Length: 85
Image (cartoon, rainbow, N blue to C red; front, side, top):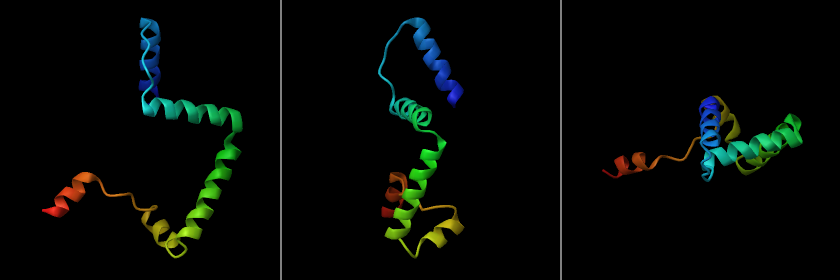
């Protein structure tokens, strides 16, 4: 996926066409900039901070979510439409 993005940026630069970044491209660019600026340890630190906040908010659920592979995602709209039928 990263190769496709870099390829697209290269093509856009070669053609001289300017266009706004997509949300995914902007997020990737910001994340890479932060990783260069702050380093891997900073990402580990904010991840641990998020984990502590999650455990404080849902104290009895962390073990259950860990066994199932993580916190459940919100249901997709298509799933909700099927449930209404």
